[in-house]
Image (tube, rainbow, N blue to C red; front, side):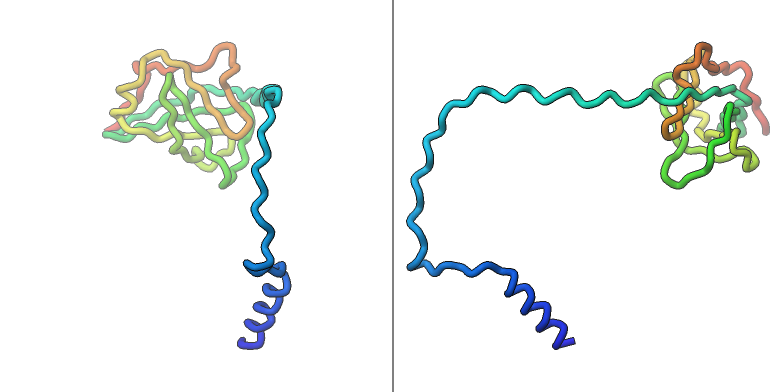
Length: 154
């Protein structure tokens, strides 16, 4: 271990450039007078990101049991489960991130929220699901929240 430390120290010292002693140091140079320059042109705008791939979504069910609410949606394609991203549900201006697969199906998602969060949502608000580069935002007729169809179970 001691030999390894001495090798590392030797390598570090070998990489360090030699320093001048204070007696040999050059006198400080006078600062150059700044000349006015033309202002640099503005940087180009950031590239526009590609639009999200359209995703078809259907509202399958809204279930309420006590304070727990489940909003189940079906998708027009399978979403492979990944640890890198989580699907999101947007209803109106609120976004929800807690979800699970419905019975392990890759084309069905169940989003979890509280009864208070459901009560705060506007009836008739559009429902949008996003995952990575997929989004249902571009649907001509997105599903809408209909609180009269909430299934309440004891």
